[in-house]
Length: 362
Image (cartoon, rainbow, N blue to C red; front, side):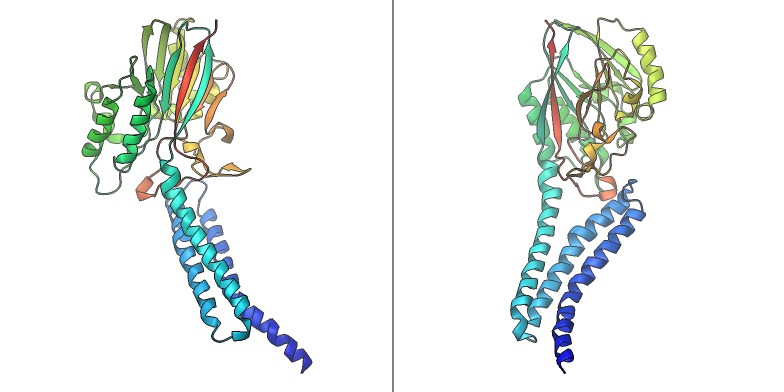
C-alpha cells in the first residue's frame, strides 16, 4: 500500500507534464523536419512553413495547453498551485512567441538604421558623401518606402548608389503601378553627382525599360560611367547579375575596365551579390559595393547569420571592411525578402542605409 501511495503522486506529475512534453517533442521534431527539407539552403517555402509553425501555430498550441491546465484545477484541487504555475508558464511562453512574431515581422523590418563609415582616399582632394543602399524589395510601395527616401534626402548626399532588388511584389500587385510609385520616390533624390544602380534578382520587368524611362537612375550592366567633380575623377563599373555571383566572370570585365581607367581615378564597383569581390583583393579598386545577402536577416548571438545565400565568408555578409586593396560594403538591405508572399522577417539585423564619407588624405 505504501508503494502504491508513492506511485500515485508520481503518476499525477506525469499526467500534468505530459501535455508540456508533447508540444516540446512535436516542435523539436517539426523543426528537424524543416532543417532536413532545406531550411538553411535556403528553401524559402520551407522558411515560410517554419515561420508559420513556430510563430503562429505553436503559440496557439501552447496557450491552449495553458488553458487546459487551468481547467484541471477543478479536478485536482489539491494540486492547484502546481497547475496554476504551469498555466502561467504556458501563457507567458505563448504570449512571448506572439510578441516575437510581432517584433521580427513589424518592428525590426521597418527599423531602418543609418550606418556611417569613413574611407580615406589619396585620389580625391575634396570630401565626398555617398549613400549606399540596396534590396528595398518592396511587396507594395507605402509609408515605409517613403521613410527610406526621406532619410536619404535629409542626408543630402553627393552620390547615391543602389545595388539592386527594387520590387518583390505580392500576388495581385501590378508591376507598372508599383514601379511608378518607386520611380517617383527615386525622382525626389537630387544628388549632384547622380544616382547609379545595378539590376538584382527581382526585377525582370525592369529590363524592358529604356535608359530614358528609368532616369534619374542610371542602370549599369557590364558597363561603366566616368565623371569628374571639383575633387577629382570617378569611374563606376556596374556588373550584371550573373557576373556579380561569379568571381571568375566578374574579373574579366573588371580587368578590361581597369586597363582603360587612369590610376588617378577613384574606382567604384557595383554588384548585386558580393561574391564578385572574392577575386578582387589585389585589384586597384577603391570601393566595392553589394547587397543581396540582407545580412542574413536572422542573426543569432555568437552564431551570426543563419543564411546569406552567397559564397562569401559569413562575416562579409554585412558591413564595411578592407578586403585587401579595396574596401567592401555589403548592405543588409533597406527591405526584406518577400519571395512568394513570405512575410518580412528580421531578427538582430535591422534594415539599413549606409553613409560613406570619402575623406581625402592630406
